[in-house]
Every structure is written in C-alpha cells, then in structure tokens.
Amino acid sequence: MKLIGSHTSPFARKVRIVLAEKKIDYDFEIDSPWLEESKVPNINPLGKIPVLVLDDNTPLFDSRVIVEYIDNVTPNSKLFPAPNRERTEVKRWEALADGICDAGVAAFLEAKRPKKEQSASWIARQRDKIARSLAFMSSELGEKNFCMGTHFSLADIALGTALGYLSFRFPDINWQETHPNLDKLNAKLLLRPSFADTVPHD
Image 1 (tube, rainbow, N blue to C red):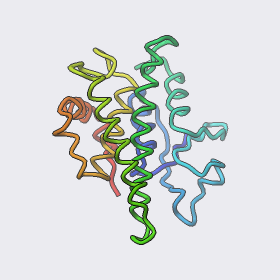
Image 2 (image 1 turned 60 degrees about the vertical axis):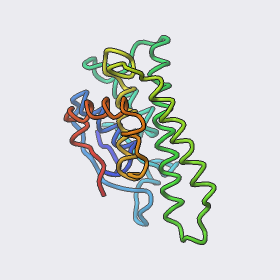
Image 3 (image 1 turned 60 degrees about the horizontal axis):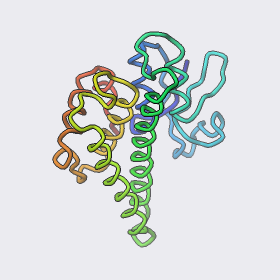
Image 4 (image 1 turned 30 degrees about the vertical axis):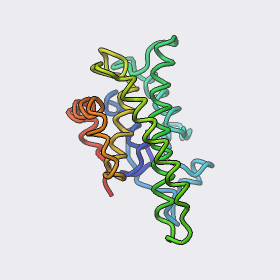
C-alpha cells in the first residue's frame, strides 16, 4: 500500500499512527494539494490528503474511512470495538478531534493570507471551536487512563493527533496548563513509537 500525505497534516499523521500500531508496511509518498505540481487531485477528486492507495490501485480517502479500513485488514491490536455503543463513543471522540484539526487548519490558512484580506472574526470563531472542544474533551476524559477508560483505542489516536497539531501550529493555545489531564494522556501517548516517530514538522 502507498500513503500519500505530508509531515504536517494531522489527518495523515492519524493514519500513519494506525498503520504503525497495526504493524502494516507501506510506502509514504510526500505530497500536498497546496503545491502547484501536486498529483493529489489526480488521485483524490476532493484534492485532499491523506490518500491510501491499495495494492489494486484503489484510492481510499478521508482519514476516517482509511483508519477503519486498516483496522479491519488485520485482527491484531484492534482499535475499534465491535459495532455497539462503545464503537459509537470511539467515533464520537474521533469526530471531535478531527473537528479540532479542521478548525485549526482553517484558522492557520486564514492567518497566512495577506493581513488586509484576513477575517479576524473567522479566525476567532475557529479558535473558539478549539477552546470549547478542548474543554469538552477534558471533561469527558476526567481521571480515566484512556479516552475509553482502561484500554487504548482509535479515540486516543485521534485525540493525540489533535493535541499534537495544536502544539505544532498554535503554541499560544496553552492547553497543557488549562487541561492537565489532556497533557498527562498526551505525554503517555508520546511514549509509544507510533506517536514519537510521527511528531509533525515542516
């Protein structure tokens, strides 16, 4: 399999972590739809990363679709529970974490525009989404060891990916101090090679 993505994309990182946790070999092809010569739109009509190209050249896109597919490829280290209420909870954590990343990407890109063309209210709205989502995550996590209680799952991967992206792009959002329980879980996740080896960088 071939994964197309970048070292800065939180969604590509989420997939890379899942591939590492499942011990699946793949080729990582660096590409970004923001590059003029990008081949991404030729593979994913939505022009987004990541894209997982299967052995038969079928492209899978949207990180949520990709990670669920990967988890079903091999029986080891299952990251999703069987279809039930718990699985819905895992996917809810993923939706929340992905939403933080979506808001972060939107705010980051808006801030890159020429100053006179930027919308301060748009950036503030995205950052408010992030703040509210972090508070909700912190409340839901409480004193648990992992998002789902005692066991590591895709929920933790999604959360750790979102927190890593905020640390990378928005160091001024000091979630480590405002939500120490999130910081504690994030530190635990970074002890895993799958997280340590995929820390975002330019």
